[in-house]
Image: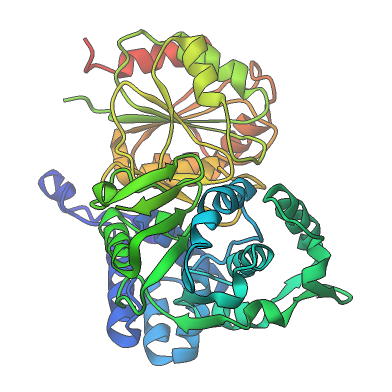
Length: 287
Length: 191
């Protein structure tokens, strides 16, 4: 970027001079925290920087400082920026092997509980929630389960509540559903329109959608299963540890944790607090 | 102290052969970490690291989220996720949009590594039928790093190196053997 030039203050200063854009990004993230209480300070830096630069183009701002001014004075602008700062990439039964392992290894143990609470943390636009609900329904557990579906992005949560997905993705979802051990036809769970599939509202009868931040909020309920997939890769290690702490505190004795296919407890402060149930499928159990 | 701290390499079509040629020609004591994006079909698993390790007899690992970047290791990006370098010289993964239809993207690795390593970075762009990597190599140059491009006349597919040459003047344009010799000379820490 043109604003990335290092000030020429002589060789001795060179190493200490921070790039202007980096200073601006830190200030923007601090401003967002102070003004709107959204805390991106411990997100992975490389990804946040790319997303802010992407937003600069979209909003036609020449500098991050210009974006910051608009974000501070126009709350609607912040809500738009939030769509860039969060990554709503999801699909139904993503990594179907994980759901298959969940069904085979974890569900038989969940069936021993008289009632269940499941937390889908960072649920984005809801694909993970409906996948979980369908699996629990097929295993006869949905009626005695309460699912908490949380995210920081209210726009994503609203879409999750509506449960309306583009029909062009349904073919891939159907394949995932079958690979994940689905026992019925995936089409049993939605009504197809011209361009959209509307998920069966009975699937979300026991779902509570709620605004919750893994960065700033605390535990709200005891749960037996936490699923948090492809959320933690956007956090630095400190924030990952905070999230693992929340999951640990929320889970009941011998509760289960499922992560994304590239996420691990291995290097975290909580690696000794869980045992690995399935390493390739990233399923852990609280000790 | 070594001026150069790390190497990033990008390749697409024809890349397996080019990468094996390049890495195979490096001295066994080559100590700089090498981070590689080779465009891959989508999927959950890739055997690339194992295949390279077997063929090269060197330590090759898939770049894992939050793992520290260590000397003497060749890292490859796994499928379906972008691989970035953080300021504390650890990796991070992300599922942001594809860049030039690619995830992992060479631009994403190069731009983040340029941010982290600055003039301590060497960027190498090889064969490919795609323009990913050209902007990334510009970032490496803007941050003071050294830029190397495979001679398009010798590349299996010239589109990727030519896309870079259309945007910038790299420090060196060389065939694979020349790139390997140059990299070996840059790694003074092992001598």
